[in-house]
Image 1 (cartoon, rainbow, N blue to C red):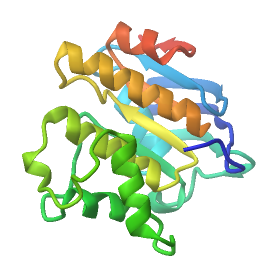
Image 2: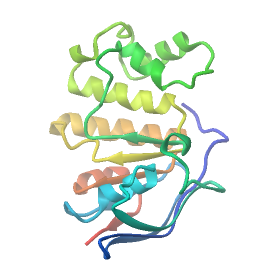
Image 3: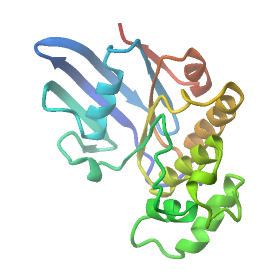
Image 4: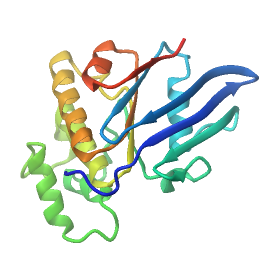
Length: 213
């Protein structure tokens, strides 16, 4: 996947999130295309809350102020499906009722031409050529993670949110997936926000780091 005209900065402008009147976090940040901003902190520090705010599914129990901007557009009030933001979670979350190829086709925009060719090329790009008809349950954890990453990229997001996506992988696989994920995000020119408690994740991301108390 190459850099494209959809490249944009992801901006958190005077973001303030509280719960029952208690401040959880404040954030002012600008993430450049291809850059990964890492937000670190212990459980309960507000990392996942920040992701929910950026993605558009923050619980109404929280009080949130500030804006999330993607390029020139304020996406703060948009529903999640219209924000143009992709998410990668701790679990691959592949659809069990779809084949590996079906999961990738799901990621493609509805009007995308030559879907079969795009799926085949995507599988080849992650070392899974010929796996299109396989049941996702027959894949290893690393293979499932690669499919989840490629499904996200095929959806052509304009920014990406990463919720500790390597935490459930063993050490060797974690290093491999870090390299794959961050290189693909840089190649695609996508501004990305990573939340983690793992310093090695932050080091591999190679971008600025913000630590929440």
